[in-house]
Length: 442
Image 1: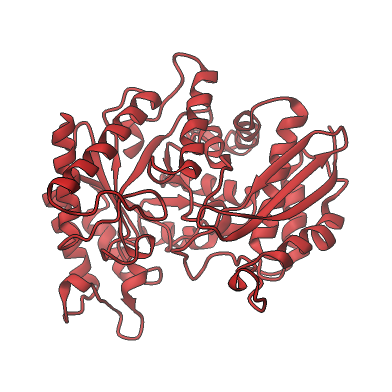
Image 2 (image 1 turned 45 degrees about the horizontal axis):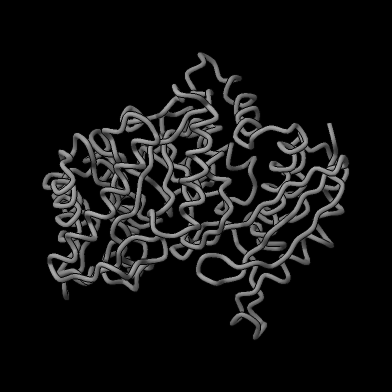
């Protein structure tokens, strides 16, 4: 197998016009792999650290010049010469050369750019699609599990798609961050995408009918209207289902990203929602509110229903709703195996959001996916609010048979790059391409 011969790195821009890291990995036979690192707005406190040029006046201190330089001068000498097929060895070298638990010395953005570019280069050397190479890496891990209970064949994921944005994604027009749909009645990925587009247009139509903003969108492409409260966003989406001729819950269901860490007060251990006026909610109040929403609307998935370190509250939420609803830990788990293992041990949540830049290398991402699958936690491969034309996560979701993907809406090209990539993968897998569908929700 070819070895890694050269690394190139540069500063490029993400979908919010902020700098991010792009890396080219060049093989000894001349094959090239390229990756661009995403960046989040709603970031968890326990995520791996992205390195920014905070002391510089350029790009308002958001530049990634030092991270780029780290790739060239520190990381490259540590990994050049390693076989491209040995992703684990390259990623171990990346972790070792950084030497910190949170990737804070060299930057998770620098390490991840290299890690993903190497995977692209390894696929290029073989002349194969990225998802095929990632599937090979996944099978090596998953097939070692006893009983063969972990899915290993490439599978198109069921999309979870942003319709209405709030929180940090849309100027805090709502307390909750996103109201999303899941096309649970879709027959295949292409059908799912068609349903999604119909729903997006219908949501815009309903918003226009009630006099709400139906043009401006948030970071991830969802509409960003000013509504009277959080529940009105659910009502709009349900009305859009009916307008499309879909039966709520049977054809299309709702997912909600509460992102509650961002309105949690750690000093008082209370949640402060703007719609609750002066009243502060404790964990029990939040669980009651979420249970009420599940009872009123066709909600099948709740992400970050409680704050990132409210473990007791999460336990209560899981006991109350975990048997009926997918409970996703994003800020709670941040793709970190130690936090996921704590959740498993305490029977907290039942699903994990997988974001490659929360942990910093492809191998560590695969570790989190494997642990989740081993213990029956549903993984949802996810984009970030700051995205690019890089579509690696589409291949990752297919190659690891993750079952679900959360990209954003269908209104911005950095999102559509991933949706379109999945269409091409579906075509390459043939007319009977495996599709996760409703069954992936349990």
